[in-house]
Image (cartoon, rainbow, N blue to C red; front, top):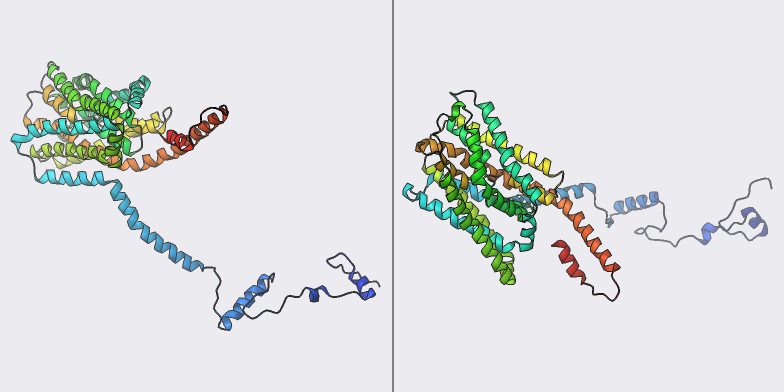
Length: 466
């Protein structure tokens, strides 16, 4: 016995077992039962499985394997993608319905206008009634404590208002100074209008709607809009006086400005009746009838009326511009220049604002400030220019106000489109923050005594989300 002995699975030598006569091949004792041609033995090698499947196919038996070919899966995924594409387009249309309706209203205003004799009445009704509806709804849907807390953030107020007035006005004046090199090319009234756009206060109602649509801090937007429009009569007139007193050639068409008493009276009257009174009434109603207000504005979604009121304000602005033939009296190359300059101004302003605000503010506050700084209100710009520049011809007045009208369409379009990326950007921060708040509440509850009162879990989650 010079050969090597083989080891059986139980550890005994096969050679010694043969010698003792007790050896029995293990393959025979563990041999599987005979199987039919439609079955594969359990534990069979992969090659045997493949051979068995080939034999089944050759013998005419159907392959019942659950595996799906890769080509079929690709076709299914392509069909799903084709089905999702119309749904995505419909979601985009629903999300941007405001922009679509605004385009339709501007097209209507370009064809049919309110008669000239009724323009003043239309402007008064819209500026007071539509804006009042917007701030009444804001007063009903905004918690009083949240509004008070945001009104007390004086550092954010200084930071925001400095950008609303100093940043925007200086950039617009710098661009006008750089472009006003050819007297024969640009209309001086349009250049003055671009400077006026940069000096205007933030929009009264538009930025509030856009901020909420982008999931920003709506309370901060309302507080800043109120403060900015209170400062507007003083800062806007002072900045316009500063930038139009430089002796540049395009300022030669302006008459001498006198006192601004009429400007202050008009602006503060409009703010009091269309902003402060509706906001206060809304706060009183929500404190007296909280359940009814929640049912009407949240469950019945009547808060959407503020968006329709804003559309009426935009339509009124373009209706007045088309009725006065402000667009027809401007050269086409000047019009293209103004449009591109205003688009560039909006993008530069909002880019600087987001870049600076993100360094020390939350994303909700950054979104609010991003809509506060670049958005401007023609509701104050039109009366200010009318009162300050008394003596200008009606055609010159229309051309000065034209950049404000165009900028309203620019800011509405770009602001509405930017709600999509800003909403996604804000969501990436809110989820971890809410999770941390929930964990903090859980730790606080665990640290309390066992006999202390515990809030139910659903109440904790609700307060965290709120």
